[in-house]
Amino acid sequence: MLLLGLSGDVIWRLSSTLYVIYGLVLLLIAFRARRRIEGRGPIPFRVLLNYTISLVISALLVLNASGLLFDPYIGPYALGVTWLLVIAALIFVENLNIFLQQRPEEPEEPDDAN
Image 1 (tube, helix red, strand yellow):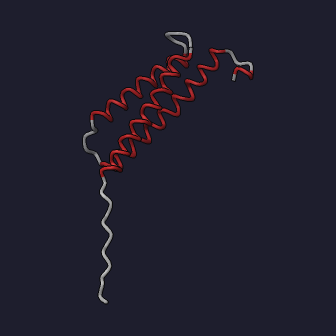
Image 2 (image 1 turned 60 degrees about the vertical axis):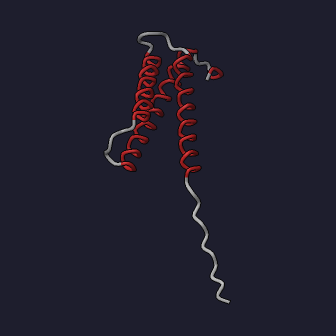
Image 3 (image 1 turned 90 degrees about the vertical axis):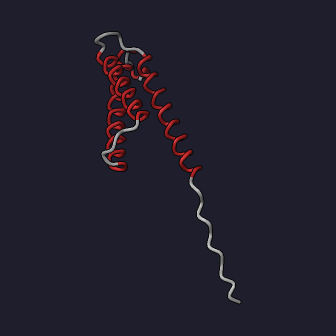
């Protein structure tokens, strides 16, 4: 974007805006998928914590994009991208744990009727 002649402020405002849109859509999809799969039961604390941190980072990125409380810079955007990587790693480890706990089905032994 710098090659297009955009200033640093515009780059971080645009990047923050695009990340907020992506992050909130991803959060909504994840919330709806969890409700569809697990029903209306209580949300586990770790999931609630992840959603809360994601919303706080999204609010920080909105402030970065708007430039209301501080001038736009890379910090909030880097925090958002880092958080996205952390969440992806946590999901991977959780799924790997589920995969490793499953026992493979034992194959049926052939009948030796000969």
